[in-house]
View 1 (cartoon, rainbow, N blue to C red):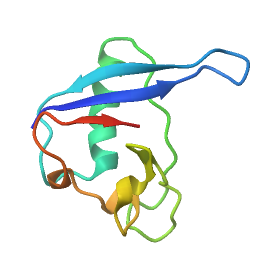
View 2 (view 1 turned 135 degrees about the vertical axis):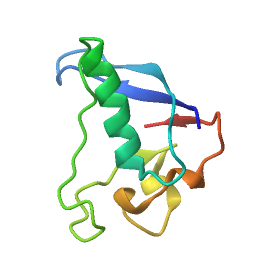
View 3 (view 1 turned 45 degrees about the horizontal axis):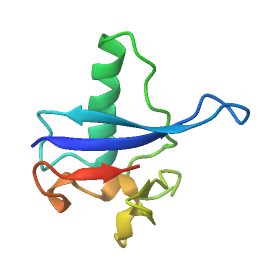
Length: 98
């Protein structure tokens, strides 16, 4: 899958923020949303760019720390935590706002 992400980036509370677009390729439909963000961060790190910061802990749907707002809705509107949201929930080529 290919996913087009638009991620809110803001260095700190005093800085102006903006949406930054990223294209994430080779996304498996079996990946969780957080694993897809890990893939993005691996690509950004390889290009000497700042990775996207996000909260997570157990990645097992227990702790609830991975509350990401996806397309304006907590957890993307799923009835589960973001770490349990799989990429099969999105269409190939989808644009997702985070």
